Length: 133
Length: 133
DNA sequence: ACAAATGATACCATAGTGGTATCATTCAAT
DNA sequence: ATTGAATGATACCACTATGGTATCATTTGT
Ligand code: FES
Ligand code: FES
Image 1: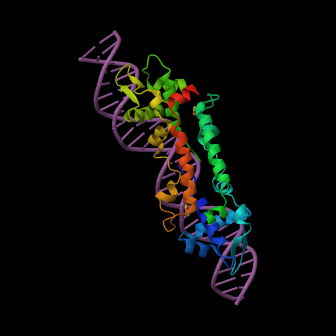
Image 2: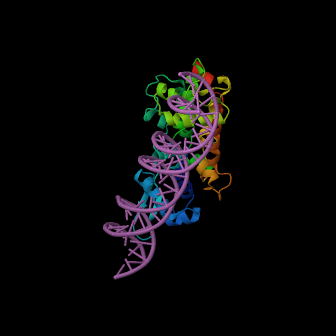
Image 3: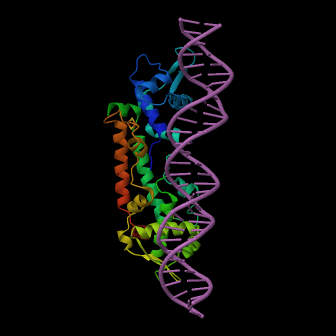
């Protein structure tokens, strides 16, 4: 059972890395090297972050990525959503209609409760709070 | 993101079904039919429950499965563990050593906190409580 | 011109999940 | 004794998600 995929984890680590970097602009290759992660995959991940507005990218020689937002505004829950889709712990149970015949099932309610707990927790975490912690 | 797999869900539903059944002994085929689930897969699931001691099985004609324990003693967390392995939300992060170089990482702590929350919640749920709820 | 970087895809390998099929064994009913 | 219905134990298959690589085009500083 995974709360975070590697994608999300790499993104968080890259963002933390970039937050403490001067000058701000870094290449995917460099981040990969410094964090010990596969460069090409790092790059794909950063491109997703760029499209989502978290990073600014610059092409060409001496190009790279830099933070586009205050790390206080980047919430963990949004990163999870970006890379893994909406946080819903009953995907296979409800969306795929396993329980279609059973209305107001107690197990369903139990799972939705837990989901709410997790969500609440994730919403309180930002990249900035991770750095500080 | 899935908290429960179908395996686990099927198991819970079968156990709830069996709790209200007289006579107690039921065949996998019958459970599958009544719950609208694939019979062979149901059977495989029940065999796991049997091996784990939750069910008693009887071979031969007019054989089948019946509950071996009080439903109050069957905890959801144990079923999840049985079918999906230990509840640990950082599987890919820690077991697979993504973060080997980073000690006392704040993200790790955050995830472990959430895991503890979920675990606590799951431990309070039994098959009996699901029926009552 | 050239090298270094991103943009955008396409591709591949692996593992997990959901599900079926088979064969052996047991046991009740006839 | 024979037969049918059930489990025990595996082996097998299909599908999907994930992690990761490769390619080609485009941009840009030197
Ligand atoms: S029966 Fe599966 S969640 Fe309700
Ligand atoms: S850097 Fe990934 S959990 Fe710590």
